[in-house]
Image 1: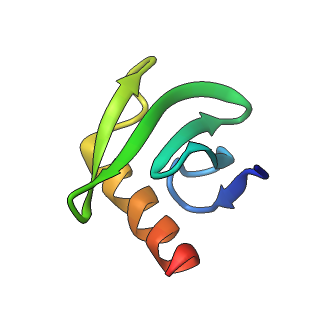
Image 2: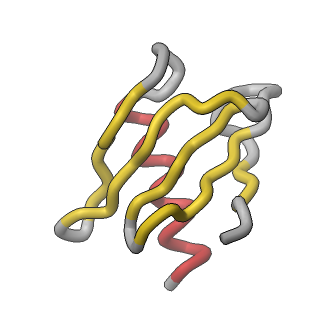
Length: 71
């Protein structure tokens, strides 16, 4: 599936979310993998992390954006 570009999450860096399974997204920042997030019980949680850029607040912001795009 095509990646969704999300602006404003990491200042000037480009954030992209790509669906790899239903409700599971691979998150990249400037083409570098930083983690995966999962939609579970109506909320978003961090599934896997690579580095310190993906915080709980960023997960919620990305998840809210994905919810607006999907529903």
